[in-house]
Image (cartoon, rainbow, N blue to C red; front, side, top):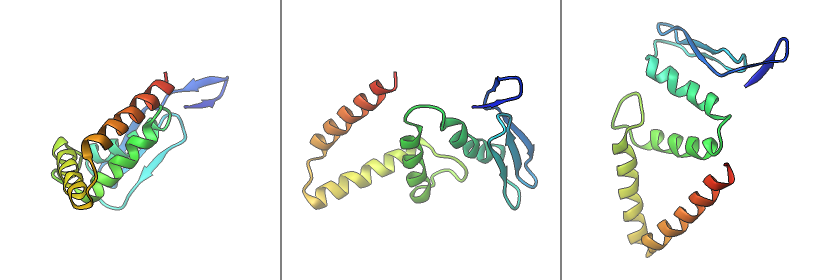
Length: 122
């Protein structure tokens, strides 16, 4: 969020100006989006969510995972889908088998980290 004029808090709100030449702004005043060529509304919304999410706890961690998944798996042409996550988890299982890592133990540790991080943001 950004404070602008009269001490008012301006919330993050997306305004798509054009999908034809991919232009959008956030009403908080801290984000603009321009890209060459046409983009779908969903693509623009996904880019904006990265900005708007920066004001929510643990969004940086979710964005890292989203970026990794979108770079590697694309079961849908414009957005992250559950199948992308399932594919990544299957590949992690293969890696653990190859390296001799105990996936169940790593998952238990990861869950403890997740709970601690989530609890720290309340």
